[in-house]
Length: 91
Image (tube, rainbow, N blue to C red):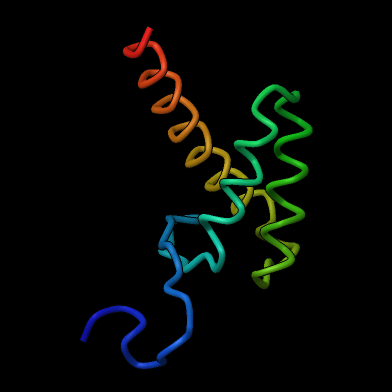
């Protein structure tokens, strides 16, 4: 069975390693799009937005909030670096 097949209409969540466990992140793409829009902002501002949006769509226990943010931050940096590399190739 493919992810999301069990529940038609339910969005498929992105899986990330958070604190050594694979966790599903709902609305991952939307969160990352919002963060990319702030690409020119400071890292702290982007992290604040990522955490805020993450908590809107996902249950994030306060005891592992830093782990969630770190996993999302690493994923964001990878996306940002890939975007920059593609832009440099176009120039």
